[in-house]
Image (cartoon, rainbow, N blue to C red; front, side, top):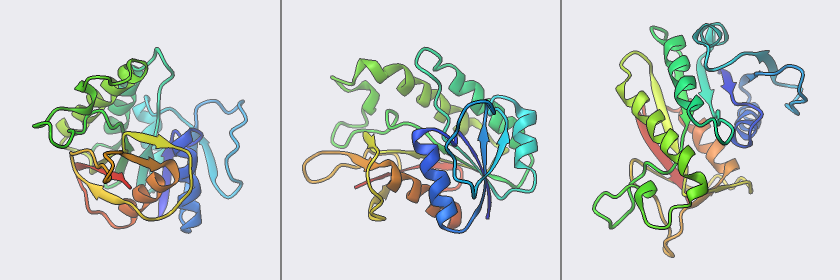
Length: 212
């Protein structure tokens, strides 16, 4: 497939690029600042663009099969996530290009709580509350859209660099936890789950989650 990745130099985005290339796909990795070292693989094409700009999105999506976004604003700029989401949806409106978005875990419901969102549970880390709320707004924008073939992937509660095992569980709107009550997945396996969805669509116009 021909895949464009926004947020390609980030923690998750760089792993998505690597996973897509390893599977033999043609990847266009989008960077916002061409003057910054990006460390992207030489086998990935690079292009300059901004997910917040619908014209950039349309240009970089032309002729592609899938657009993937893993963008994350800097602390203090969480409101940019909604702006980028609107840019992506506007740029892809009326096209046949699929949009796969990596979001947050805060909007997942916690098992055994009667539907309480993870972000609303006692002890939710204050440091990540702004981005968790921004991701909730991001998901709401996708759910309100009727013109784009989108899919939203929420990670497990703990998302860290690790190893690619290729073994994980999938769910929908409820946080996946293991026998000890922990919810975790490596960034590498999250990228694998996302590329599985790109290759074999199973969650069109809905949200899903992945965890061990």
